[in-house]
Length: 145
Image 1 (cartoon, rainbow, N blue to C red):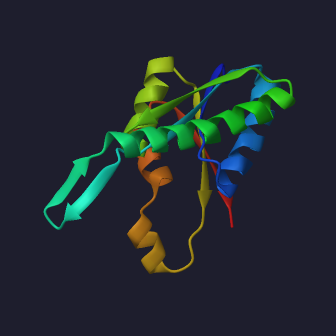
Image 2 (cartoon, one colour; image 1 turned 135 degrees about the vertical axis):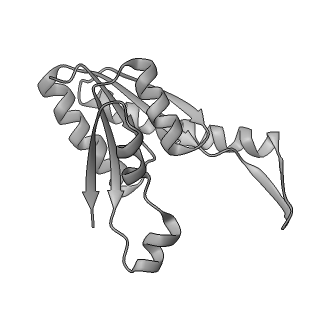
Image 3 (tube, helix red, strand yellow; image 1 turned 30 degrees about the horizontal axis):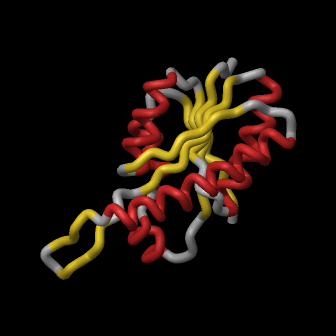
């Protein structure tokens, strides 16, 4: 039985479907529900040599991610579910797995959209696939097409 569920939420179509599935699982199992939005560390590119940290960009991005997270939390609250959330900064797979360890999650839920063509899949990579390998608990990948 799932007692603590972690949803990695980004507001995308797959993320919204994952939110709906997560809501049903949480209601059924009476689990504690936590949402996180993972924000990559914002760097301003200055050339092929690298980039620099930009605090103003980070603040804007954090506010945008917080707004997305708040929308997800409101949707759950409208369905009668108490949930809490947090914006985290870093690599998506590492941050999700570390957060799951921190809250001792029994289930991680992520959305995933099948990409058309091998080039798109290769270029983007798969957070879901990497997360399954690094996860401290079960992972539910909610697929949309």
